[in-house]
Amino acid sequence: MKIGCIQLNVRFGKVEENYERAEHFIREAASKGAEIVVLPELWNTGFALEKLPEIADKEGERTKEFLQKLASELGIHIVGGSVATEHDGKFYNTMYIVNKEGELLSEYNKVHLFRLMDEEKFLHAGDQMNRFKFEDVEAGAVICYDIRFPEWLRAHALDGAKVLFVSAQWPTPRIDHWKTLLQARAIENQCFIVAVNRISKKVENFNGQSMIIEPWGEVLWTGAEDEELAIIDVDFSKVDEVRTRIPVYDDRRPSLYAGVVEE
Ligand SMILES: NC(=O)CCC(=O)C(=O)O
Image 1 (tube, protein in one colour):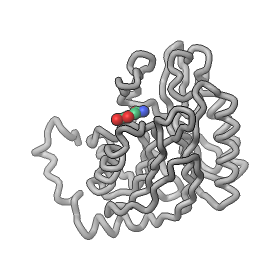
Image 2 (tube, helix red, strand yellow):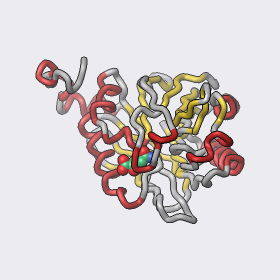
Image 3 (cartoon, helix red, strand yellow):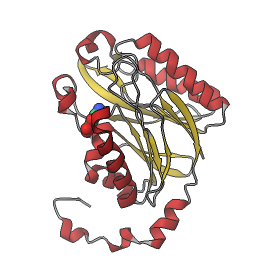
Image 4 (tube, rainbow, N blue to C red):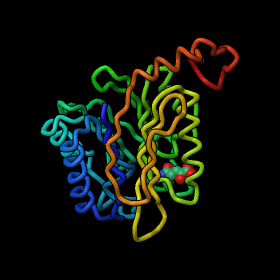
């Protein structure tokens, strides 16, 4: 399947500009043959967390309509990155997954809030997994800091996910962690990782380096340090090949991991 990764230059607090740019890139991805498109974290607002009462998407209505309309019109599956949403007066970092028929497959609130960027002061954490299927491909998705919790991604893989999407705003100073953690998550779970980071121009704080990694750990693509749309072809059958070569899932000893990974 061809995957379009949108390494967006998210404008801080500039909601209208961000929807316009996102639409521009989703349309371009579809016109270049992408079958799945992936956006970064908090692409509607950036980390303008203090302004959430004015700019968060109420009940996620605008974003759901935006993604569902584009998906069905263009016939493209969308991993909707994440957007700041408001539900009953509480704010969340929410990802929507929409299939090419325009159906909302999943709605995920970021589970692990990142204190270094003050998320816990402004946002509420979710408590649900994000599992879905694009055609016959079993998938899961998480948001940024979630990748530091191997048990959380493992839970998705144990539940059947063969590809894990990651939407992020991962800052430049820890970009080596980003690359290493993503590669480790791909190797240990023997799955594809499709991870899309943002870039920024004004504040040189986010330098992209989005990645697609296959289940053996080979990096298929690394994004530039600029705004970019990349279309990468991936062969999901590689997952079964790797899981047969080293049968990690058969060799697990879950009874020894009690309290670490719940079955
Ligand atoms: N937006 C985030 O969750 C950032 C996570 C991060 O930077 C990290 O080091 O972890």
